[in-house]
Image (cartoon, rainbow, N blue to C red; front, side, top):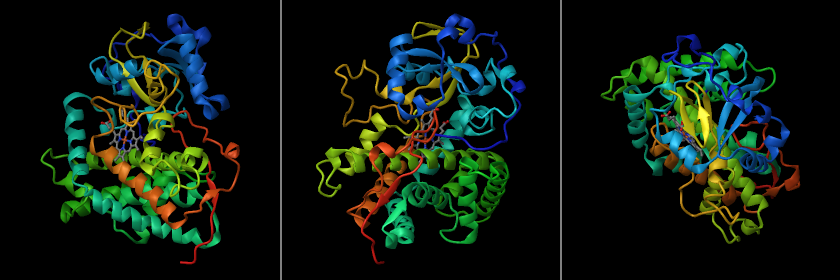
Length: 431
Ligand code: HEM
């Protein structure tokens, strides 16, 4: 998942400044630490994980943007251990022992800078905030969500159906989950206001050249603040109203922060889940002939993507509460650990025969432990992704790539795995 927003709190407000200046580099791993950016990583991360494992084992020293040191946790057992031990590996980034080295314009600040949202809370406060989100999401009727997604899908498809070709990432894949989630949170189905919020959310998460993500983020906050006020006055059957009326008594500002987290956490991973599944269906012979005639189902493709091309490939992260050991490494208090979810899913200790694939859901794509993607969210994401893929295939049964599979490029992100573009062609459909 990803976070939005430039409203970070100063890291100097660290709640646990017990950290010595420990870091992976100082602990002797500097010579071989690997930069987690660059084209090799972006296009073929599996190869990088393999060589990192061969050289470093399950926990590798890496360099984030600006050569800031961190640990990448590659092993399935180690990621499970880190996410299962909050008392050792906690979520509040103000614990970091590297803040002195972080410039104000550091590109990862939107993900790492502390925000007063559920994402960075710990212990009882986390259980309070996450509990409200979980119950609010549990109230979503999955059949209604599927129906809403179908309506949104058909509206989007109608925009390009007659042309015989489109670039699916911008015309379909990103827009569908964004609209569905905004609607789930109680924004009106139609209207200029909702359209503007969807546009601003997209800009704040993923600005194009010339756009101002900070201004868009401020507008998102203002609009959600208004939404929370409206729902306090007149609650309805939506996520925001259930958060507002929940017995935990969250303040308006807490709800706004957590709504932003929910929407951002839902949009990018779900969009990339749709994207990576479509790519698999359109490029892999096991699903070929087109899916209606293929041997494997959309459900199998969705699950295979979570094992092999998971949307949140790396997640930052956790911060060590005190000195400890992990995977044979000495981790110092305040060290940053990146959860290598994609690497963990393909850990050779799980798949000794080099074959990766399972029908079960034991992958770590939704993470695990206290801070994992809250229980109903993966089910809702599944409804959105499945409906998006199936509705597209129903309307365009002969859809195929408009370029060679080798011409598809991955977005240059260490964190999210998704394509830059997905150009397709199909027989034009007269609506
Ligand atoms: C309806 C769609 C979704 C919603 C509403 C949602 C919501 C959230 C929220 C609120 C969190 C923060 C949990 C916390 O800190 O306590 C979270 C975390 C997370 N989500 Fe989701 N999510 C959605 C879809 C997805 C998808 C499709 C994926 C990937 C396949 C995903 C992967 C993750 C991961 C890896 C985390 C981080 C967990 C950690 O810190 O260990 N989410 N999600």
